[in-house]
Length: 436
Image (tube, rainbow, N blue to C red):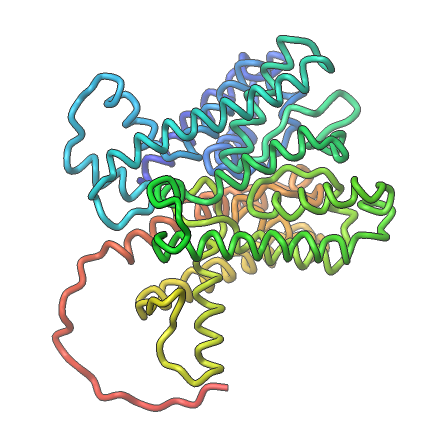
């Protein structure tokens, strides 16, 4: 799977270097094309060129396809051909499809994959219609439909690429629609649904009763709700009087913008307020929420909501003197706790190392470098404006972070979860160490 993503990224990079991909008809450097292809395939959204003004219609199509493939997984997209041709899915293909969806069992994987494809088509299609109807009166039928489709796919896949830029106004994201409820709420719904996870969709559709849901689904839904509400409330608290962000808006605009900010930090990458103008506490909150990200088996990145939930439950259990972690009347396996610790440490160390390296190379403020590094690793795509100005080495650091964030940690998680566990050949006596 990891090699498959590399192949898709390289193919996308080659296509983006061609003169037909750029608006001015010139060749694009392989470095810039590789950065853009990696960002699109890893559904991040960090860019070195303004997407709307630099790339041609063909370039936009390449980016859109990379986003869709990267969001759903190349094996999920490849299975579409098998479904259309009514070809039997082999056992090996089922195993690879399951790994791509973060599933540990192959039972029902074909049905789940079919639901993923149909659900994606339904959500992206509905979002595209709503957005197109909003954009057409503003930019005309052809461009309005194009913008509706592009932003619906980008939002659902949590990619954050946009076509809002204009000459003289580059990298605006969706700041022009900060007080527009149709655009903001549509993007928010698509981002949240895409970030919940494909298994969660299927489980909710089958059970339709919270008490009957799997433990995983319950943790995802509750944790997602808590993080969204916390992000919303804290953004209002930190930015209410900031004239560069929420301070200039009326009460309704402030509530909408704060809600959008909370949602987009879940690895969406769109922004309606200037990220560089955020207060210090909001920047710290942003890094925290970006690192957590979305849910396992979804289009979102980060160390995932379930990881955060398990670590919080483990902490509460330790404070109560318990040795077992419980949630919703179920005991969480020690292996899951170890996986959660592993994911957090790997994510934190990679982001911190990348930020330190970029700050050293560019002599840039560390807090800006940390924001960009966490955004890259968690495949968020939010930026404080630093990424386009970085040098070659720093760009390759971000490329590595985006790839590891989307593929490396996911592959590590699947490998840990699916590895054949053999009984230990030796048992060691327990030893006591002092902690804290």
